[in-house]
Length: 485
Image (cartoon, rainbow, N blue to C red; front, side):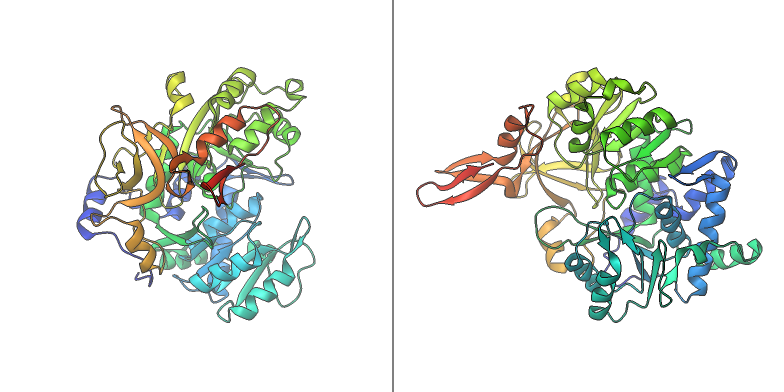
C-alpha cells in the first residue's frame, strides 16, 4: 500500500533483506497469532484488575479490530494511541495492527500542543485515549485538538462515564460476532509486511517531535534481534513499568515478550515499593527501565524487605548509565544490568547478559541486529577509524528510511549513501562495541575549549544526593559560554 509521506526502502536492499530472512515477512498481527497458536492457555497479560491467556488476548484483539473496521476505519488510516501502562494498551495496539491501521504512538504526558502538532502531521481519523488519567481530564484536550483537526472523526475513550458522542472501548471488546466472520474480515484487511504499521514521535531537544514511520518488516527485525540480544524466552515474566508510550517499553518489553511468548505484567506506577512488590508477587524475571527509575529503586530504603531473587535481567536505556549505578544495581539486586541505546528511528545497540563487567559498565555493546551497519562519521561525513570519535550513523534492515512528510529533515539527517545520522557522538572499538561520548548539539564552547555536557553530567551524577542532573551552556560576554548545571 502506498503511504504518502513515507520514504520506501531501496528496492534492491528490500529484496536482499527479505531473501536473507532479516525481514521475516510477517505483520505484527501475524507475530501475535504465532504466539497465541503456540501457547493458547498460557498466561499472557496481567493488569491490576485482570489476567488473560494468549487465547483470551487474541479474542479481544480480533473483536476490537473487527469492530474498528465496522466503525468505518479503513486500512491505511492513522489512529492516535495514547494510553498508560494498562492491558488495554496492548490489546488496542495489536487490534490496530490487525485492522491494517497505522498507529501514531503518544505518551499520556504529551501536551495538547504536541498532540495537535502530531495530529496535523499525521492526519489521524481516530484517537484511543483515557477519559481521565490521574489529574488530567482529557475531554478538554480532545475538544481542543478536534477543533484544529477536522479529519479526527472518532475518539475511543477508555474509562468510566464515557459521554454519548464518544466511542467506548468496552463496547468494541464485547464478544458479539461469529469468529468466522471476524477472521474473514481481518484476512481481507491484513496489511503487507512492507506497509507502514506505526509512526513513532522522535525524542531529543530539537523542538516539536518529528514522526518516524516504521514498517512491519523493519520493526519486527528490531524486535527479533533485540529480544535475542537480551535473551527473552517463553519462561520469562516481563514487568512493563517504563512508560509504554515510549519505544523502550513498546519494543523491548511488549514486542519482545509477544515475539517469544513471555508473560507481560503491566504496571502503572513507578514508585520503588510498587516495583518491588510486583517483582516479588509476580516472580518477575526481566524488566526495561530508564536510569532514573532504577536509581530510585536501588536506593529505596526498604529494598531488602522484598524477595527480588527472581529478577535476572534489567534492560536500561533512553539515557546514560553511570558505571557506579551499574555496579550498585548488580551488587544490591543481583540481576544483570544490560546497558543499551536505542532510537525510534531504529538503530539499537546493547551489551549482552553474558558480557564481561568492563563491557557492561563502559559501553552500550554491539548492534542488536548483526546486519545493521553502524559507523562513526567525522565532520566531513567520512567514516572514522576504530576508536576515533565521530557521529554515530546507521543503515540496515532495522533502520528507518526517513521522517514522515519531512524532506528537509531527511536531506539533513541522511548521508548520500543512506546512513541515518543519529546526532550522537561515539567511538566504536575493534570488537564493534560502541561507547556513546556525547551529543553533537551538547557541546559547550567555553573560551574556545569544547566541553561535553555529558562529561559534566557524569561527574555530578556520582554524588549520592543528586537525583537528576542536566548541564547546559549559558551565554557569557567574556567566555562565549559557561557551563551551568
